[in-house]
Image 1 (cartoon, rainbow, N blue to C red):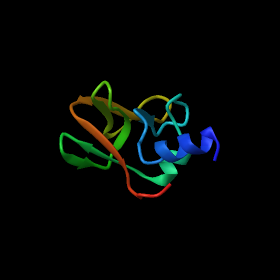
Image 2 (spheres, rainbow, N blue to C red; image 1 turned 180 degrees about the vertical axis):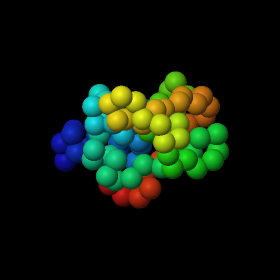
Image 3 (cartoon, rainbow, N blue to C red; image 1 turned 45 degrees about the vertical axis):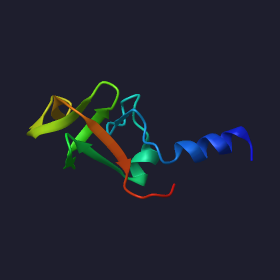
Image 4 (cartoon, rainbow, N blue to C red; image 1 turned 120 degrees about the vertical axis):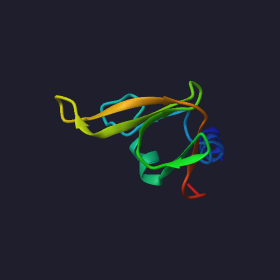
Length: 91
């Protein structure tokens, strides 16, 4: 086992500090999104999260069905305790 294998094993159960659904974002990671990430925000399960940041304590959620001029959903930032988790336990 090399160092890369050891790091991937230890990091496999910890979601990243920040993640986005937007493919144009630098925080987008398709492999993690395919694995399935769940978000608890202020103790409640959220299914409409577009982006989150644990260290800064916020999530972005779609603001209804409104779209911007590029066709992306308009979002609002909500502040509070963010707890991401993987929906499956194995990587």
